[in-house]
Image (cartoon, rainbow, N blue to C red):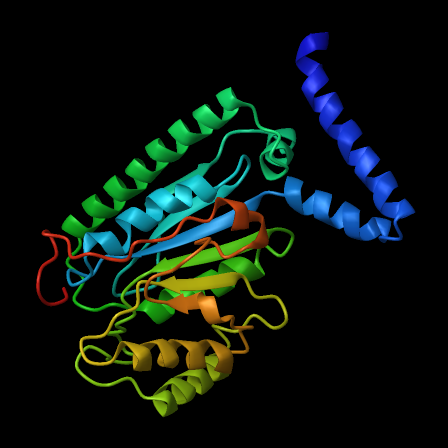
Amino acid sequence: MRVGKMPRRLLWLWITTLLACANAAGVPESAVLSAATNAVRSRLVLVYADLSASVPDTAWDRPMVRLAGELTPGDRLVLLPISDRAPERPLLDTVIPGSGADRVSVRLGLSTRESRRRATGTALALGSLMRARVGAAREGSAARHTAIVDAVCHAVQVGQSNRDREVVALVLTDGIEESGFANLAHSRPKVQDAIHLARTLRASGNCTAAPSWPRIRLVGLRHSTDTPALTRWWGVLLQELSYPLRAEDVSSHPLGSLLGTERDALMAVRDPGQGVASSARGGRR
């Protein structure tokens, strides 16, 4: 019993020492406490996977494996589909096993070789499970349209109801909106159309987050004629909704952390880019 408690005692002793040293160096104690709290606090990670037939498997299968490696003990992962309507039920809802002390150990690089080995095994299993769930959902989906905007607004609503925790929404999609909001499949995305849509959404009150936005990242964007225009379209839409957009939040081939948070910077892996999966079929459902 005593031996088992020693690593955690040493960990918290280290944090206490850090607080004392920081205070002596003139660093506000509140700042250090905030950093320690963020390391312990669990996240809600929402993953939206585009089920459209035109989206290659590589738009979400490799990112899911990468994502699984960025999750830390206590994080709650909710996997949701993007189809012709707002997500109604998750494809997967799970919590990464571990305690607050385990989370701090991971974030401070104090994990043992054995704990890292277990974490790697868990990440591989979780990545495979997510890929299987999305693959099965796409095979069983007959959706004729793709409401990506609905997924973004869903993330906003979830973030508003979970203000006491960090919420990150990862949207794995080619960005081709085909819904009552817009049809970007066969036309060049226009900035003015994005501005008009944002005004419509703001007026409805269903897609605004006031000062508290979850982190939203759209990954995998590609357009048959003009991908840069599509990227601008989504960036303008989010900005017009008052989202604090960062350059890496809307991208084709993400580099660095998929979740885009500081705590994941050390786990960042360079993405070799999307390929074309043999199972991808022409046209969208």
